[in-house]
Length: 168
Image 1 (cartoon, rainbow, N blue to C red):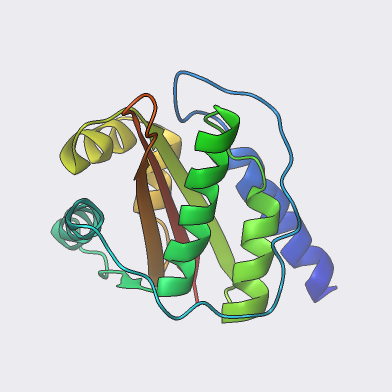
Image 2 (image 1 turned 120 degrees about the horizontal axis):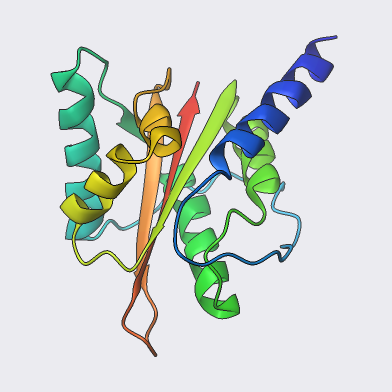
């Protein structure tokens, strides 16, 4: 019963978070990302740290708890950024696998994801997310932890953002 409820909640999260994200979309699948190994090391860029601070500042300003960063979640976000760059897509492809990994490895109860493409600053990406009801709901969601990755396509110079939220 509990497993079915978790699967239903995961499916609803996937459907909800796939509503809108960017100007480009495509359907691809990724390899299984459900290995039970926790990634403990992640080096944050200034832009990633600034984006997390902006998200937490916003959450606190509306009376919500700040989120705690987890390196493993940022690593899973980074994997997705590289997937999008390598496949020239902007999508939530593989979200179910990322979610399952975070649930299995970290014991998360719920997981949500925001992605963004081609924003030149953390503030611009956050503003776009807050102007999108689905993304804003993730930012304001009942989460306790998060991770983020911002990677630039070396060919185009365009930035890819993946921000994953979890309730642990």
